Length: 286
Image (cartoon, rainbow, N blue to C red):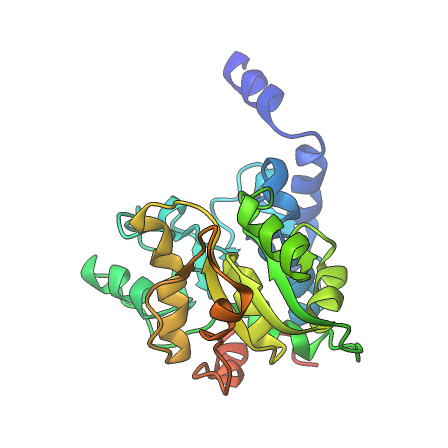
C-alpha cells in the first residue's frame, strides 16, 4: 500500500482524473512530446497537440499526465526524441533522432514514418524494420492553417531557442534591418510572422521546416558554436527533402546579410507529404 501511495504522490496534478477518462473512452488518443520548461513554447514542440487534433479530430492526452498506459499506443510525432523512447507501445509517425550518438532503446510497436533517412538508418542498424516514408509532420500544418499575409519584411530571422540572445541575431536585426521572429510565439502567430517575410534565415530546425512548408525561401544559419552532433537532426531533415546541404552558414562578426542570402534554398520539396498523411495512424476519415 505504501508503495502505491508514494507513486500517486509523484504523479502530475490531474493525472489520476485523466487516467480515469482514458479508461472509459472507446478510443483515446495518447501522445508524447517535449514540454519541459521553456521547450514547451518552442514552435515545433507546441505544434504537437494542435496538429494531432487537426489531423485526428480528437484532443490528445499527453502520456505524462496519465498513470499506467503500458497497454495503450503512445504516438510520437514532431521532435527529435526517438532516442528517449522506452515504451514498447510507442508508435512513431514522423519523429527523428537528435544526434549521431542516439540509438533506439526499445523496438516501437509500429513505425509509420520517420523524419528522414538518417533516422531510418539507425532503426535498420538496430535490426528494427522501418518504412522508407519520410517527413516532419509540421510540413502538413499549412493544410490546416494557411492565412493570406502581406509581405512586409525582406528577411526574417529565426533563432534556435538557445540562441535568441546571440550577438549575431542582434547584428542582423539591428544592424541590417531583418525582422526577428520569436520561436516561442503562439503556433499561429509564429506562422503569421514567418509569412510576412520574403526570405527566412534560421538556426532553428523548425524555423526551416515551417519555411519549407509554407514555401518561403530559407537559409540554414548557425548563430553560435555547436558540437558536430548538433547538426544530425538538420541533416536528417535535409536528406528527406532531397537537398545536398550538409552544414549551416556559420555567422561571424564580419558576415553580411547579403552573404547569407547567397545560400538560400528554394524550390519544390522532395518530401511526399500526401504519403506522410496517408500513413498517419490516427488520421480522421473525414
